[in-house]
Image 1 (cartoon, helix red, strand yellow):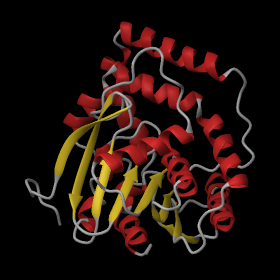
Image 2: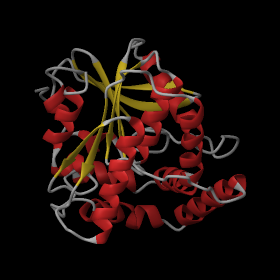
Image 3: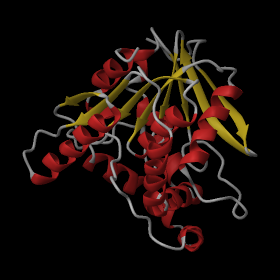
Image 4: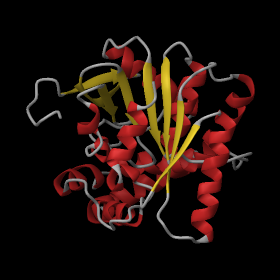
Length: 293
């Protein structure tokens, strides 16, 4: 395992499209990159990383505004897109000098970005692991994407002006995490949660991604029709089963099975686990990554 202070664990900031991004590299061996879901931060993978570092070079990064990364400029930046996130992943890997093949691991919304990376850069993808990935078949985005992005910016700005993120951001993060695990607790370090989630930049980043969610789903659907995945690419879909035989759980698992069938992927479930699989079953996430060769 990579212990605190291990020289193989390095944190740095890489400037991508003018924005300083927080990036961490740990371990040694073939490269895998972990990208999180809506509103996620690098430390959401903390429990998974020690299982991987004896065998993999692990890369984590925070998208603009999330975690420790700087926000994008207040104006003049395009709204989030799948293609844009793919290029961000590529730029992070290139900035680290990791220009070979990489296993890309995406959780939730990050599953869109991971799959799109494998389609847009087949020469760089060694494998694909989708951890309880978002699934939106035949997504139809709402109209006026530019206006929606402006509205998200404006709402975040207004909330920040009256200290809403500072007062309620960490508590909202902890509540969301508790509802997303069978443990019903947020295992992320409390000081980091306070530092990262009481800022207006985090709220703005989350709202901008949220209003563009269906647009990104539709964008990925378009890529699926035009850019096939490489033959023989190892793909794993890892679905969280909370153990409840509710209609909601059954529908979610059915969607995950359909995603696996669409991609020709190995389908796995892990139970009991909530949507934050990395908290409930970090060993299962690591196994899915290490078995994807």
